[in-house]
Image 1 (cartoon, rainbow, N blue to C red):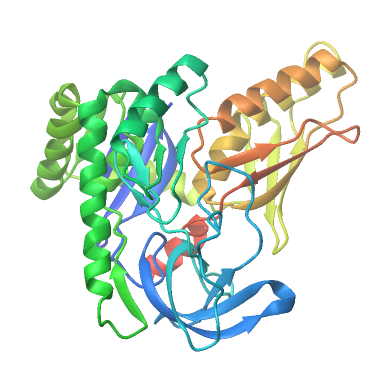
Image 2: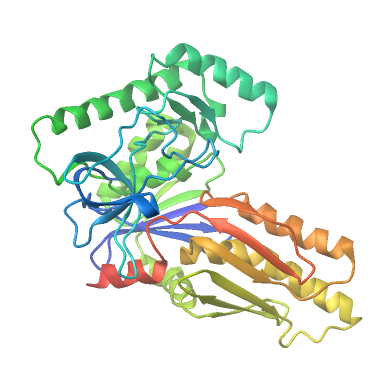
Length: 399
């Protein structure tokens, strides 16, 4: 679980680190609302329609045209997509309102959707998808039904909302206030669109400390550590509005060294660029990314064990299952990942490894799904692509 949020402005661009038990889990770079920033809403112009691919290219004002899929949606209520049949077919030269869902990378333009969504603390507003959906992390059926009933009273005709996990801890008043704030954001987008020539950014997604706290803060956070008064005020404003008790855990860094260096965050970042990860038992992971997928090979390495070969393999695989979710989230690897665990004969061992892997993946907001361990010892899983890999974002920040 995330138990620390560290925000620094040292060295130029602001960076925000999420840590759990003293280890880096995810790193964010402050966004600037650019046309190709994930979450930005852009009025674009269709430059080409590709019927054979059920897609279109859209000029969004970035270096490369964005890629807009027109394919049938996935039946996943947690993922905004082209699920509403009121969306008009696109034509070459036409204006189209899109939102960035995937960062441009590896010579490809940004990924786009016409299913706009705006995130609040408790809700995600889907103004072109009239539906009520609930986070899959809220599993109690009675709780889901109660939340759906509350939102049915709040939602207006034609509106859609997804209730985030944080919605389970607040009452109708907080949900209604969040909905009203999101309506105001959407109204501002609509106002900016009037008479705007494409390409035009109508809502520039920013990623500052406030947005990170909105998406990841919880009552179990033991401290929010910042190194500027501005960040301190931003954190305090969030806490006052949403988690008052958390405000007492805001700390201002006063060390002589830069915060990330003194606390080992820079070391964690450097290690995340190495394809080899050493496990505490002496085993290792080899992580290799290709254009098609990410492959992770689990090796016993120096772990020769003290009892049996089966015990050695089980111990190595269990440590790998605990570490892999953190590595994927930290490195920002999206799409398909294939994990090659060491072969285990016992079904109970395979089940234990899979349970531990799923426990870690369930805390990852970008995790979509995974299958079980195959006869060959392989596990396939999928994560959403987002801001791009950590390596690519580090390179962009250095430019």
